[in-house]
Each structure stands twice: as C-alpha cells, then as structure tokens.
Length: 382
Ligand SMILES: Cc1cc2nc3c(=O)[nH]c(=O)nc-3n(C[C@H](O)[C@H](O)[C@H](O)COP(=O)(O)OP(=O)(O)OC[C@H]3O[C@@H](n4cnc5c(N)ncnc54)[C@H](O)[C@@H]3O)c2cc1C
Image (cartoon, rainbow, N blue to C red; front, top):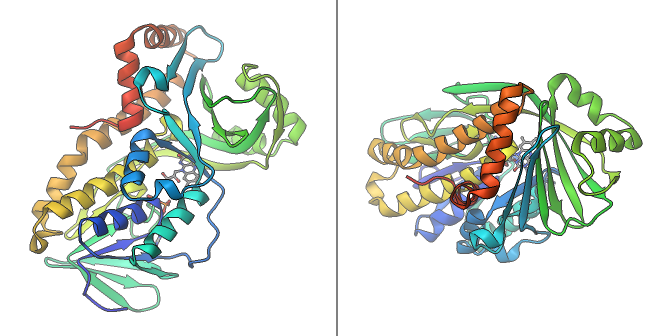
C-alpha cells in the first residue's frame, strides 16, 4: 500500500463506505477503501429496506440499475394488536413510485462492489484496521498486518464494530431481539408491507420476491425460544402474534436473531476522523430509518468534501460543519425511532387508547400522513 497519498481513506466497504467512496469519486476526489473481509466473502442473509430517497442516491451513483431482486413497497399497513386503530400509507398519496424497496444485503453489496471496480476506486480487501491514531494534519490507520496509511481525512464506516469504537454518547437497551426469516403467506403480498405493534415489540412483514421478510421483535428472554421452534409451531405462533390479514403463514425459512439497541456515537470522534453510517448511529429497525440515514451520511459527507477546498478537507471546521449539517436528520431519525419503540412496546391502557387515536389521526389527516410518509422517505432535513 502507498502511504499517505490519498486525501480520504475509508474504513469499511459495507454499503455506507462504498456509497461514500463512489460519491467522493463523483466529486473528483479519489478515495482509498480498506475492507476487513476478503473480496470473495459471502455477504450475510440480512434484508434491507431502502427508502425512495436512498433509491435517488443510488440512481445518481449509477448503482440502482445494477440491482437485482428489488421488491417495491407501494402500501404500508400499520396496526396494533388487541386494540383499535389502523393507518394505511400508499405511494400514490405521496406521489412517489414506491414508499420503499426491499432487497437482500448481498444484492446491494454485489452491485456496489462492481461499481467500485468499474470506477477504478482502490479497495484493499482482506485488510483490517486495528487502530486509528489521530493527529493535527492527518490521521493514521494502523493495519492488522503491521502496515499503516495516513490521510488528512479518515472516514470510519465499519458498522460500529471496531474494537476502538468510542463509547456512545447515548445508548438504550430495549431488552428486545429481532427474529428474522422469510415466510410464505396464503395471500400474495401485492407489494404491501405491514407494521404491527404488540406489547412485546413491533413485527414487520416486508414484501421480498414472492415471499415476505419477517422481522419479529421479541423480548430478549423469548427470542431464542421463538427462533428455535419447529417450523409448524413457529407458523402457529406467528399467526397468533400477527393475525390473519395475509391468510395463514404456510412456510418459514431458518430463523436468525440479532440484538436491538440504540447507540448514538455521533460523527465527531477525533481530529481528522469522521464516523458515518452504523459507526455513528445504530437504530432499532422499526421504522427502517438506520440504514437510510447511513446512506445520507455518506452522500452528504462526499458533497461537503466536494464543496471544500482540497487543503481544508478533514479540517476541524469541515468536520464541525458536517456534524452541524447532519444533526437534524440524524437526531430526528433517532428520536422518531426511539419514540415508536417506547410508546408502542407496552400494554398500558391509556397509552393503548392514545396509540389508537394516533393511528386514526394518521389515517384521516392527510397532512400528518404526508409528514410521516415523507420522514420515512426522505428523513428530516434542516
Ligand atoms: C445482524 C444484523 C442484522 C441486520 N438486519 C437488518 C434488517 O433486517 N433490515 C435493515 O434495514 N437493517 C438491518 N441491519 C442494519 C444494517 O445492516 C445496517 O444499517 C447497515 O448494514 C449499515 O451499513 P454500514 O455500511 O454502516 O455497516 P456494515 O454493513 O456493517 O458494513 C461495515 C463494513 O466494515 C467492515 N469492517 C468492520 N470493521 C473493519 C475494520 N476494522 N477494518 C476494515 N473493515 C472493517 C465490515 O467487514 C463491513 O464490510 C442489521 C444489522 C445487523 C448487524
């Protein structure tokens, strides 16, 4: 590896790091990306929900047209178990082709990898960053294999997994885990997604191919037991939990679980270092905000770099301007998600009725509907 020749070094070629690299390249800045996984690593089986706003970013980078296996969401049905109140959002009402899109994480990473290669962006696969040393003029990456690299700006897009990650400024443990799998329902999905709030946590069905991707939030103590139920018992339990709006649940793929928490670290870590995507904020998946905020982080950071004189890239003034510019969108998403999880994940009677009224208001008040739909599509901009 050449030392110290790039203006921007990016740690992590996940979706956020890759989008940042492509967007920087469009701004005329050649980044270098370091990715711990080998080039031929198989991406895991998680499902992503992209907002319409994320589609626009991927279109501008020429990635959207390369994506395979994308399923649009044209309607969202929101309800709570055991109480009144239903709200429906539709793409037509907000005048967008789809409210969101569902696709395998693997499909996105394959398309991004190809786009990085076609754009001749330098990516060092199989190179893990062990430590970052920040300095006044440059930050230095100390690599696990003993080498090092330095640049005036280091972008940390490692998903928040690095051992050297700073302590989050704000954390909330929801005592919940997600049980995820794909399910086949009796009725076809017709591009409709469901969000159903229950006292144990929200359950979401996202149309994916000819099936649904299920995200079933459960209390930590119950999640592994639910995930390990034999198929037939799992399908019965799911019907009991979710209700019969899609008819019976006929089939389920093997279940996986992952812990759900809120961790807000923020973008500012040290001189010459900026954190974006899951490295800056990890959110509960309830409103599909986290991943989309991460893509906007990447896009906005690259745009700001493009607007900054080369000698000022990575300066304290630039990093402060980036943090200021992202505050409303990021904290808006953090607050909105945290509100939904906490207000809906309980069975307190007055709250249950208030939630019913809230869903009714969402159903009948077009401005409120439009506000919620736009937040889910574009986030909050300052
Ligand atoms: C288990 C799990 C399941 C999820 N399921 C869903 C879901 O169902 N729906 C949804 O919308 N979102 C889901 N999410 C969240 C979603 O995956 C993230 O929002 C999204 O992946 C964030 O992208 P990112 O690029 O910031 O981080 P990541 O996708 O985590 O990418 C980080 C990249 O950095 C690399 N890296 C890490 N450390 C280093 C290092 N030291 N040196 C070099 N490279 C490094 C990693 O190999 C990886 O390629 C899930 C997250 C997890 C952890």
